Amino acid sequence: MVITIQQLIAFSPLLILLLTVIIIILFISYNRNHFFTFLCSIIGLTLSLLSLHVTQNSIPIDVTILFHIDKYSLFYIFIIILSSMISCIFSYLWLKNCFYNCEEFYLLLLCSTVGCITLVIANHMSALFIGMELSSLPILGLISYTHFKKNSLEAAIKYMILSCSISVLFLFGITLIYSITGSLTFSSLIYELIISISQPDCILLCGLGLIIVAFAFKLSVFPFHIWTPDVYNGTPSAVLMYLSTAVKIAVFSLFFKIFIFLTFFHINFFNSILEIMLCFSIFFGSFMALFQTSMKRFLGYSSIAQFGYLFVSLLTSNNFSFSLETVGIYLVSYLLSNIGIFGLISIMSNVDCKFQYDTIDFYRGLFWRSPILSVIMAIMLFSLSGIPITIGFISKFYLLFLIVKEHFWFLGIAFIVGSMVSIYSYLRIITYLYSEPVYNSSTRKIVLDENNKKCVFILLVISLLILILGVFPDMIIHVISISKPVLFNNVIYFKNL
Image (tube, rainbow, N blue to C red; front, top):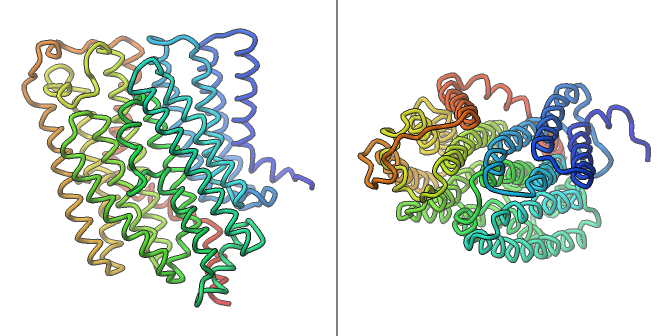
């Protein structure tokens, strides 16, 4: 097997990150230095991000049989690296104040980022499995970084047991598919489904079902969502910023790329499963979020509903391009809002770590203590709920338009009811921000040091970006519309046979 220069260039974002991981391992074994490890991680991520510009000239391209890189991959690699970079910045302050052996944190985060990128460019079931495990196992270490806290240890154990169980089912699903197709490439799976479209093989459908279960678990969609509130509650905010964005976006981008074609060929088995998951996720996530007193548990239930909404895009049968735009805009909106809100919680934990900063009551009267932080949080919550002049509104509008266009009237009712309940939940917290503080301990002004001020500046930039993209969404829509996966062309070709 000969690797060409073009393939190496196309693979350079992943190679740079792997080199960064090796350098950090060598440096940790020689001499520990928190700042150097942080700096090395940021430089590695920045170089990987810049290499995407060079990679544009070499795509689309197959890098061995395992990976395929196209504009669709580059778009999501950009999002993943950006999320990792901001997570590293916010983690630095948190680790600096509280922990020893901080260097391994960046090592785990970079290893998980490598796994996420592997997922996005996977073109083979073995690459898919390796990417899934490589993105999840380091997360286990990150969740248990505060293992001396009861909630953190409980979250790590729950995540480990459930994740291992799902990995076994996932591997069994791949085995069933291989027993029918005789190949593990995605194109062979598509071909086998198309030639047996009138009478799909039961074993093949079982294999697909098990793989869907694995994806649903990673995305915390009903009924595989049980781990989400507890893990969110016990996980540090800086880790949640990464887990809720980079990992979930990588998993969904691949899920969309592989399974969108199933509805294209009207496989009812797949449609029925998705519709059930979608409706229950929206209702369960939205209603349970109403009764939460912990901010992290609230965001955990909110994420269940958010990915329930997004599943509508997988049911489209005739509007591939529009579904692609919907998913891209929704995930960008989700990325910005989640980074913002978890970043703000992380700053509050640095400032007032002795108080219960995880509770919703703690944020009552935040405006009177720090107007800037309260405005940032309000913008993030407005975007998550889909209020106009935010990118969250554009993403929800796209989803609703898709529902109307495809005549999904029943799903439309679920979407509207879920959205109304969600808006009430988010508005409840926003009113808390501008209410009178209740506890004497939380009435004093918030004073930020220089490092925290820099983090607030990042959050202000993200808030402005949410508003600018909410008013002028054309710039992001154009980028997403030209980032079409090549696999789409294969599907259209097979359908015309």
